Amino acid sequence: MQKCKSITSYKQGVNAEDCALKYLQNLGMICLEKRFKTPYGEIDLLMQDDQAIVAVEVKYRKSLTQAAYSIRPKQQLRIQQTLEFWISQHKNYSISPPFQRFDVVLVCPAEIINYYKNAWISEVTN
Image (cartoon, rainbow, N blue to C red; front, side, top):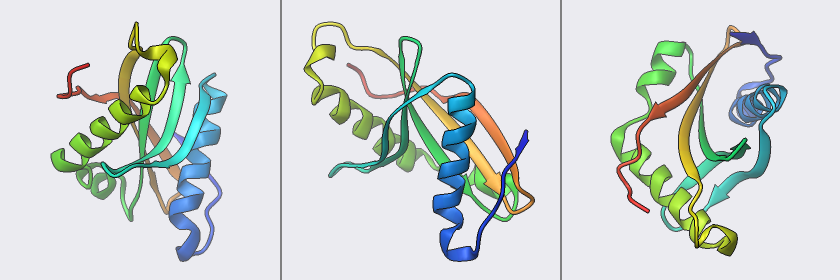
């Protein structure tokens, strides 16, 4: 858990993503994209962690429990398809697709960040 400075309600989502980005960068991860959008969906943060490409979903809710339960299987599938699309657009991965990981960062008004590495397993095949 890490504390993060919060802002007014309109900017809470953006602030949560910024806090998550700083947190992950402090862990040594490299940001590849922020708010990457495709016809399939959106990835809040696309990071590189060593040899892995990591799709990070950031959720801001009144409680960490509410944030955790807000990530549904349908949304997970959209994120997975979006990551597959991103990889397909980067030809350096066409011969040897990178290891893919799906992480979650939960943020609540109490300014607490919870980070979950490998939050779910992809159902999309390379």
